[in-house]
Image (tube, rainbow, N blue to C red; front, top):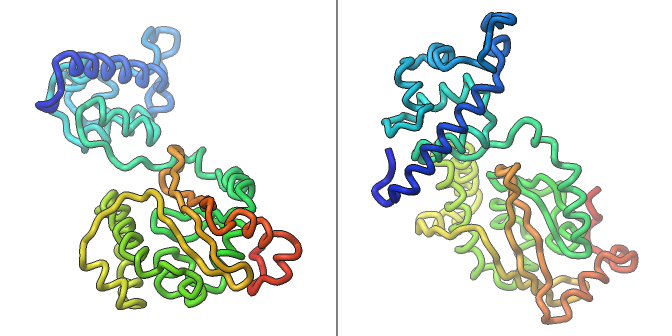
Length: 295
């Protein structure tokens, strides 16, 4: 059903797009792909017929016809999922179907063909050098990081590979972070915001329980129930080789991979931060680094 705030014109356009979208998706699914006889040359309908979609989805023929005609009928997520399965919709197309049917869309999942993007993302964060950059999954587990993140932030294989837990438990990072106490509440609030996007995902709860067990400070901040969207954080650090560094970390997402978060650190125009970062990743700076660069 359309929402009360939706204008009649917007509703008409939405239902018209729903009609055209379903017809186009139905036309591209062959009977053989749906497990039906193809009918040979006698079949004049491209793709599946309406009644075939209805039967395969387990819904009434009249109901599906009304849906495809763009009538203002009541739909449920379960029925839309059945239709999406029969029409072989991609995750993005399934989400679009929910929007056109005026239902809250599900969280976007990466399509199978987009799962292998790590080489391109590795090129992205390596191109961000000499500035730190890393990539984490939806639970803030570390996926990739560049050399500058290892040298400046202390990211390395032997620590917990979860950015939230490492924030509270890695002594090297805490020793370098000048504004750790001020930043900690924001970090926890941003993780709670990420959790709220997937309320039925047990993976988030597992991270929270591990963080609570590892850090009483995290447990106290978690109970505040503060919420902040992921965005930008100012980080002030004291590096043992170059002294003060002030950067701005920005969280970015790629629509095709909503399960990943790219975190880019940009030097602020203070404390000669950009020049210091360039020196740290130079051959001379690497020789003086406290920890070897992760390969």
